[in-house]
Length: 359
Image 1 (cartoon, rainbow, N blue to C red):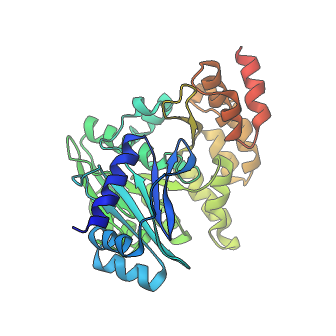
Image 2: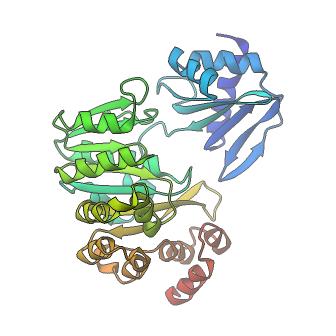
């Protein structure tokens, strides 16, 4: 192992000790950490190009390294036994050479209770079938929430669970369920192919790391239609945008059919944000929750996604809540500051309004 690789492992350990979510290095710049959502440069010399390359040679497969050279990006994950704890690696080329972004993963899968998600989220894990979507920007906790759901299933029921990820981030040791981890590029070529193939493997639950394209979305809808519980993520901001994103991924003449399919299988949408805690001890998850009630299904079938927010506002009894409602509750409880709550929503005045109502 090169001295440069050892130094990078030291950076990883230091980043974890400070509670960082990400470590960035390469390109001739000083290493930097993502701390509570802020990028903070370290008082440390840059990681030189040969050292970054040596680190990647130890972390990535030959195929992933070839992809970096041919396509400019590559993804991988360090094993959970590596010093410094598990992490995801993303390498990318630029004018100054190669840069590396490391996403630090939890050393153990957190429980739903530890994440502080609403009880209705745990209820989604008990569904026999349907489509459950976790949405939000990069770094909003989608992957961790999915891992917590799989962990709940694994510990409480006897089910066959298959995860399809790029790369595999959380490894679940079977407890009561059978859990199989499939990695894009290592085990299968793409999400859609993996989904179609695993339908013949007698799965009960299928986790899709990301629905990136229409082919993957179509395969996920089919899997949910045929009696499987499907968890997936999308980079969308709220429930209405998520529905529109799925429908718009298909040709215009297929929109009516897709809306009908989605309405039939949608169990819920959870839109996440991470907000710095008021006491400085990390970040707190806030969530918008849409549940697939009859009213929600009707709006999706009819293409009235602009009315979904009103249904969420009036659907408290079914476990629904807007992001602004949850943010306001966290403000009232003193868990997050009002300014931080308003910074993560496009409707900041509604956080203030709900806070006044709650008080």
